Amino acid sequence: MNRRSLLPSFLACFALGALSAPVTAWAVDRITWLMPEVDTVAPPSPGAASVPVRRGLAQPLSDYLTANWGTPAKHEVLIANVKRSWRMVEDGEQACHLGVLRTPEREAVAYFFDTHLIPPHQLMVRRSALPKVPRLPDGDADLEKIWADKQLRGAIVAGRSYGRALDALLAKRPAGVIDEYTTSDFGGNMLSMIAVGRADYTIEFDFVLANQQELRAAVVAGNAGGASGNGKVSTADLVSVPIEGFSSPVISGIACPRNAWGKRTIEQVERVLSTPQARQFMRDEFISHLSPEAQARYGSRIDAFYFYAKPATGAPK
Image (tube, rainbow, N blue to C red; front, side, top):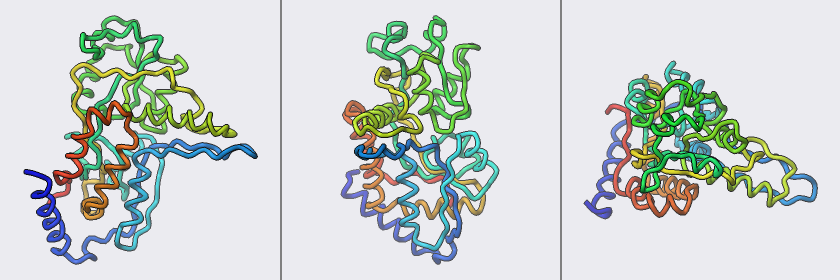
């Protein structure tokens, strides 16, 4: 089915759903948006040029939802690590997580609305350690061989999902090959740890490394007085390597508690983010974070995700 034939039917269904119940039935008067720490740059020293701040994926979504919510509501943002924020969703608090991977286990406790089709996780390693990474003829890293060789030590974020298949493999890893850390963000601090040699590799998205390198370049170019977050440490020496067997994109979305409040909220999220304008906004914002290589490889699939099919929602009808 082509885009021309699908999009009008999608918009017709959307309009019909919006008219099927009074607005008051869907009203949510207060909501907390949960997100990881956002990279920020401290004010520049006197006379120095200002440095543009690169925002993550969650902040633009929060801004768009707040500006286009459509009914009176108090919107708050809470920055918390993945363990704490997901516990709030599990406990049924009036809070929704922005930008969390969708898995069957999480669907059991949350309603979802899909917002991003994200290129797969990559192995992030220092260039000097690259010769020790076992690789297949196509260049992909063999994660299980890395563990068997025991020459490199990994680091990952405790409580974070790396996608169902990769989570299953990580659960089977030998003891002592990877350390887990609780961080205020979803893994940006891991890249800094690899850069300074506290571990040899981590697992992360391509766009996260690209954003950190851009942030660091902005700090240096702007001669800022200081940087908070991950702009302090240069990650220029890190390289990303595809992981063998994990080449498919993963779906990320907004998750609200699986209760009556969460159902009303995720349905309002769907109304706000299902318009053509919202989908164009999400697509453009996300593409701007990807490296040229990732755009070339996954750009057509990302376009199809935003424009040719209605994103899935976990809310029952």
